[in-house]
Image (cartoon, rainbow, N blue to C red; front, side):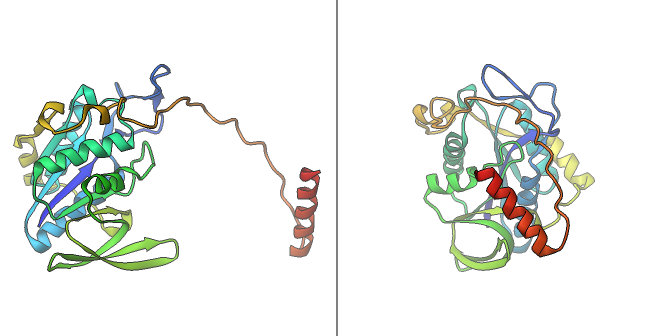
Length: 260
């Protein structure tokens, strides 16, 4: 089974700084890590390789420093790392990012499965994974908590819902976005860490991929951040006391006062 895992390098701290001119994250001087949800995607890719055989290729789009994320993925058991890096990709929104990553996956060639974390901790949009499947015109299953079986070009998975789960069977190739309930990411072995240090990281830029220049970077991003601000602190409320019927009546009276 040829598996591709898409990951993202994100700031480790929630105390991020914003460039007031571009409204983008200032990454200089901020320690970066693999997006936490992507750790589960890497682990699931490696586990599926151990179950069914094959190869795990990890892909990330980002600045040169994102190479460290690929090496960490290799130390966990991935076979190959590809960095999609070019100044032309800067400022990409989720649409342009998924378009660019889809272009890289097309260049990789034959694959059976793409795995992504359900969302990134710095954007929380949960759009890139589904966007990749749209650009590649393959089926997708989101919020996957378990891969039950894969055979005869079909995969059966459990998809998490708010109350329970549903079982979905999808043809391959397909794309999955996974939740943290799916596994427990392993700690890299010493052998894995040594292998990651000597691994050759492949780097692809705009010229290496068959991409429309109008669909990448800021130019290819239909959405842009216009303004970023900190919301005003909430004003303290009040605690209603008494029996349930009394509290209900107090609440009704408060709502009426607000409406009037």
